[in-house]
Amino acid sequence: MSNELERLQKRIANSGYTSRRKAETLIVEGKVQVNGETVTELGTKVKESDEVSVEGVPLELEDKIYILFNKPTQVITSVSDDRGRTVVTDYFDDLETRIYPVGRLDYDTGGVLLLTNDGTFTNLMTHPRYKIKKKYVAKLKGYLMREEVAQLEKGIKLDDGITQPAAVKIKRQDKEKDTTHVEITISEGRNRQVRRMFEYFGHKVSKLTRIQFGPLDLKGLNAGEGRVLSPHEVKTLRQLAENGSLK
Image 1 (cartoon, helix red, strand yellow):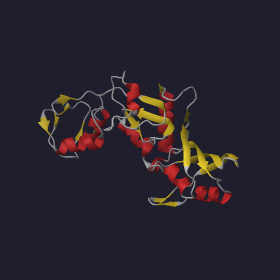
Image 2 (spheres, rainbow, N blue to C red):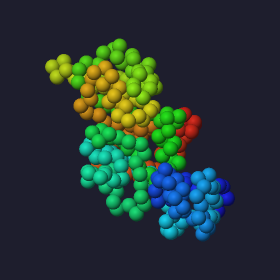
Image 3 (spheres, rainbow, N blue to C red):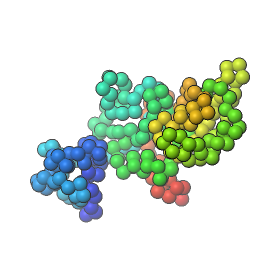
Image 4 (cartoon, rainbow, N blue to C red):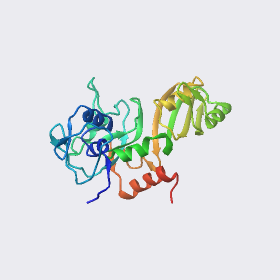
């Protein structure tokens, strides 16, 4: 058994009990005990051998699970919805382990989405500094011009800052329907980012699908289907985040 120390809120999140942010709230509210004693300090660190209870319930470390899901459109990237709409975790009701989406896909955006109960992995996949590449295909209203592509590849100024350089490839343009089909790869994950990038030039996105996350794609998965990632795939994603490349 490892004697390595980890923050208490991380231990709680990694158990699948709740998110790290909610865990911090529970600690401050005095609802967490370590070896039978209430702890309220957020800086507290624990060993694997320490017994942790939350709201009187002893934590059990869950086996880690990593799922690749082909999210349909009109599904919420969340574990619950106060309006009763379908959420991504509804597709995994048979799992005994609670899982959470890694990042977000808009309600009207489909495609590659990861789900896991590993909070550290989630942070690696979503934190901007790790720059995991995500590839999308989009259908736009209007003609995307060469100079607009050049600006996207350089970076444009949105209301939440300048975007990192994107890779853009025009796949098809239809003069009669006045539409452009385009492939775009980004390494960020801001809210509705791809849509906002095209809307910057006045091009409304009518269809958007994420077709790739790092090396993972939708091969073999219809909308609403998922599969468990292999240990090699998980290792590859970690390596991409930590090293910036495969070694």
